Amino acid sequence: MNTETLASASAEIEQKGFLDLEVDPTLDLFAEIERLKKEKNAIVLAHYYQDADIQDIADYIGDSLGLAQQAEKTEADMIVFAGVHFMAETAKILNPTKKVVIPDLKAGCSLSDSCPPPLFKRFKEQHPDHVVVSYINCSAGIKALSDVIVTSSNAKIIVDSFPQDQKIIFAPDKNLGAYINKVTGRNMVLWNGACMVHEIFSLERITKLKVQYPKAKLLAHPECEEPILRIADYVGSTTGILKYSQTDDAQEYIVATETGILHQMMKASPGKTFIPAPPDNGCACNDCPHMKRNTLEKIYLCMKYEQPAIEMEEQLRLAARKPIERMLEISAKAGL
Ligand code: 13P
Ligand code: SF4
Image (tube, rainbow, N blue to C red; front, side):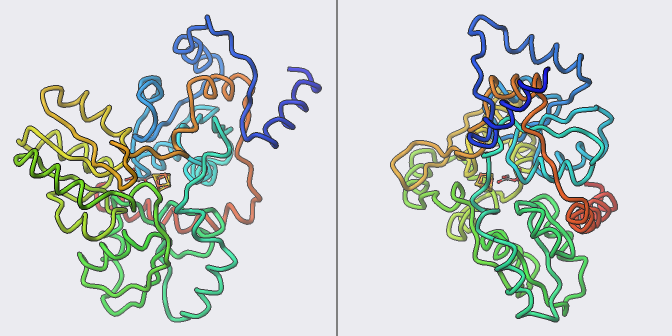
């Protein structure tokens, strides 16, 4: 690609967050993405909340922990991250010599945005004798202020690894924090953040669905609010929810997390019925607008032009890496 094309692509990314070039509508994007994977020695990592067609072209689909583990160990030259910004940033922190591209730089996260580093720094200073445990759904700036990172797969194990009398700040998700307080018997100080997708499930509409489907089990992500978690039959990460639905012998499930997960659930258990839990806004199911910014076209373009790419200042990367490494070590010891 010549310098002029690169410069105009960079300007467009700065303005829009993604490349908006015309993609030939006759192009077989599935075949083109496969071709680019080979040509550029690239790997596509996708979160379960991505659209079904993106999951179908991915080399690995997983939850935040699985995606971080894959990003750390991959030997591919280019990591194409079909997820949101903090996930791609984590991949770059763990594997800095690789090019990490993201289909849309503006694929953010309401939870991560609810915790700006300067405010959190002040909050931390108000609790000097506390260690900081942060959910991976946060910026590199917050990670750099943390002692250890957790995901919904390992939060309990990691919190349990601290002595019972250790004072802890948990950020940024107050719902996951409250759930971990409950299952560990702790009293962690919680940052007041939440996920815009998981905090709007409607208890009333879910209760009506339970009456309509009396044999259905309710599966919920711990980012949901407490009244939903209290009536859930299973609470866990996206991987946990998927595994539970495969091994459990019920035939019907109400699923209280983002709808993208249903694609793998239906693929793994084609005979079972999966009903998305409804939010309190009148819609039937609940999509994350950030995750859903990614499209096959944007994946194709970011692979072709190798942009937008995640870049980060080295000092910040090193500071953010430490608590992630601690998480990966504890997880590996626990067999996760
Ligand atoms: P997990 O897939 O790690 O459970 O996280 C859910 C989520 O909200 C990711 O943004
Ligand atoms: Fe963030 Fe919630 Fe979307 Fe996950 S589902 S990326 S936590 S806004």
